[in-house]
Image 1: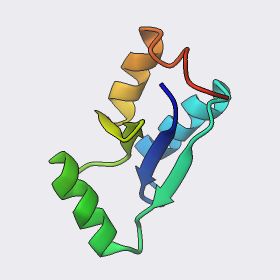
Image 2: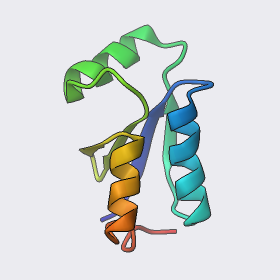
Image 3: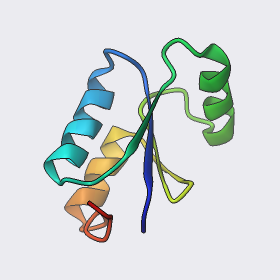
Image 4: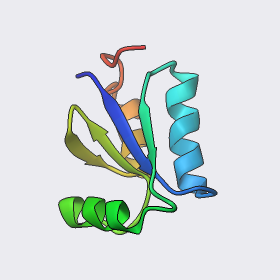
Length: 83
């Protein structure tokens, strides 16, 4: 596992929680704030089929949102990510 990318919306509580988890684990990530970019938000939604945010990708593979990220963490799935 490697690069983590988060697509977020400004002020989104779940987005904040996902970033807090990654920050606490010292896992590096790229944040793409799509609040003001409707076209990019629509592109990501059509790519994943999910309308909620954050949208979390690891190595360009969609893994879900905040809840799925926390499930990965509890199962040790984030242990191999670079800091």
